[in-house]
Length: 261
Image (cartoon, rainbow, N blue to C red):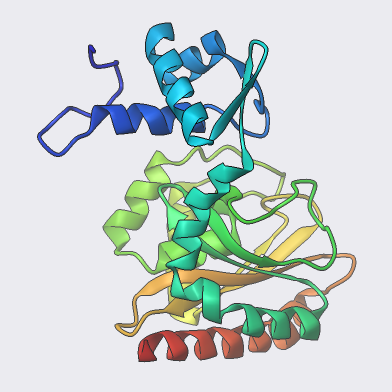
């Protein structure tokens, strides 16, 4: 089968059929829970014949079901994500400390990791729904405009951080959003120096959040943990003077436990 434009250049270690199978799975999503064969082919960049073979294979394996002309994912697809979570030490040991933070602050507490230009939520203890976006495990947000993202970017070398900022779509999300790359670089440098990031109404009107890093045994930043709240419910002083200490204690406990693994 001819290589599709935009696919990575093939080499001895590149399994094209696997890559196309994953592209087929990723064609589905919140906005496209059900797709026709033609729609899958178009979204995955495949021929109809290629998409059909992959869909039928996934159906036989139990990851896809077909109803008439429409294909959709089955709950078995969650096994793929659970394999990552169950193999991640953070999944097993962080929840009790996050619950302590959520109980003390009465606000949602989350942990995310950096993937490309985005943060990916891998753990979340929710209390109130404070955002118009319903966040859950697997949710993604732009790293440059979120408190956890800025903590994770601060853990990178300056050159790598600038590269990610350059690759990001720095379009304003609210009237408060900082979009200038030099100013963002300064904010991330300050985040690195002070050990936390505080973001006010840059991602969504009314929302502010504060995040701290989680380290591995070599003091590398491997994840970020945050608390989010609404400015009508929590003041800046409350976030910095009450919520931040709880976050720092929890992050230190998690990091210390990771260092012993």
